[in-house]
Image 1: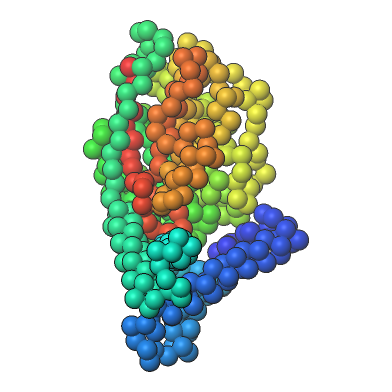
Image 2: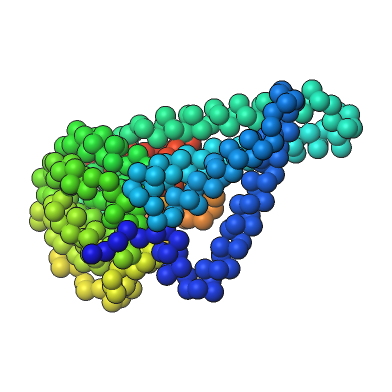
Length: 396
């Protein structure tokens, strides 16, 4: 039987031994250096408040927090592995905001000394309140992010197709993506996602990739997840394309899970849905661990749409190379970006993608594009500056 994939092993298989070793050296150097700075900075602040706090106890507690994401990758029994995975996921969100705000506090004090508004050496009072502000801001952002990640928002779009009298007119599509089943909190959230989908009374449900979180065995209760997904109510059924996290050694188990969930997976395939649209599902160009030998085809390699008189809707997980879709395509549905998931990553996704969220159309001859921020979280179970969402699309 297949054993659970270890995340480090997946990385090594994807990158090769030399690339893996180099990447690990760089990652641990950067992460270790950042934790050395942050741990030292927090300890110095604590000493201002509690002069007798022990360096050994603090170092042990901080090291356990910092190492929890690494320890979660070890081949441990289920309970400690799940516990460390949860602790490590939350810690990474806390770490990001502690690092961000302590760096901001130190830069502010440096600027103050250069501008002569803060004396040199920096007074104890200024160091105390700078550290306090950093801690309070980090606590506020992470607390808000955790609570916000528990919410499911509904977003709606109306898409007016260019063809008058199209048989697709009035079609209600519900788009979700990035469930990341197996990630922290994903299975508890799934019931809320399914309820939100059913409330929209869709004609068609499209899942635009990243249904899994790299590994089928990361799902704690796959049978309950199957039952929930089977409870989706849709006139023409549920269709999915695959994302970059939907591959690897457990790929066959993932496909079996989707089949049992009554989800039709389109892997560079067209299907006519209800005689109203042609639906194309694309394989992602960068699957982690691969799709069992399958690869994404270029558009020229794909067969022509089976009915050229019907609008063509595409599920393509990652919104890149949108220019490849010409006037022969009407609507592109994507996810992947999470809209950055937590601030300030949304500033980065805006730069990386032609569109990282929402409705977009390059010009009047280009297809409509809808990119969702996703219905789940990856890594850190937090949302700051973005939302988990279910998207309702009505074609006109």
